[in-house]
Length: 509
Image (cartoon, rainbow, N blue to C red):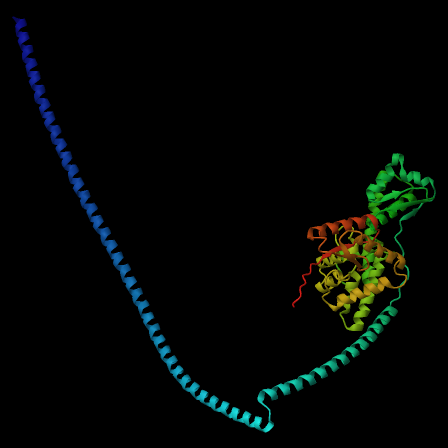
């Protein structure tokens, strides 16, 4: 019995629990729905508020843009109005000017009409006067004009020819007399030696034993000396002498000084040789600078650049046909100053051009080209005036002379070089060298004529155009240069110019 009661109680409890759970679940679900509805309503309210704010902001922005557009439109209208007012003002001004011009044109037309009438009347009076003159003289206007012009022209031509002949005769007589007087005066005022010392190339030895010491063991001393100086030492059978052979006169003088010191000192070995050569080179630099300064002082040319002074000193060891180039330059400067004083040219520029005219010979073995052009470039590099540079470059007429001072320098150079005893080359040797130069050019086919000019410094070759074309002309110039270098001995350089001329000839019949 108790088990039944328990079972019933348990069943009732289960039923009650199910009922209570169902009721509780419904209550909870109802509450959840209410909360969800409240949350949704709250979201809807917030969305409507946000929408109102966005609409209000859009309206404010649109209002702002509308106001800005209206303001810009007002400014543009004001600008258009101002432009329109300016155009109207200009139009009014143009209208006034046009009216003024029309008034002037009308006034000018009236004036021109009056002038035309007066001109017609004057022309009529001239015609009446001419007819009256023709009637009186019995000649027409054209005949009278031609006769008068012909008479005046004949008289003027005859008088002009007579005056020209008188001027030419007087100028020629006075020019010859004046030139002869100037040249003789200048040449008499220059006192110079007839011979110039030559560069020393032979070193005297105290005894024959010194040759062996100069050569050294297995030739090391002579090789060291040649390498240090750049000069060849020739030790042959010449008794008690050593010959120095080198194209550069300055290097040859350094070698001579160094060898003389080594012989005097007696200690000859490679280390001592290098030390002695360096010392001799320094001493020679001092000597050359002093020689350049003395040359500038003797010539009366102050203010030269130190490098030009140094190059002048190098000319002390350069000779041309046995004539010392530095002495020749000083003499040319003096002659140029005297000539300039006689004819009224610039004395200072003439002296400077004469002193520096051969400055290119100091480096012509190092720089390609004629020494005159090299000298002009060097002088320009160190601040010498253009007039003097042209006188230097033009003293062999390789460039055009631009002043009377350039002509003075050329004449002074010719006087110094051509006076008796100035140069060692005899007339026969000189003429033979020019003849050999021309014979070399004539030996090539196609050559018609040739001329050696500028004392043998240039040869001009004229070729037959039907035998030699432009390309062959270039080849001919190179071949002539090669042949000259192989067969002739000459100072400086020789310019070869090949000229090919084509002439077209016809006759009008």
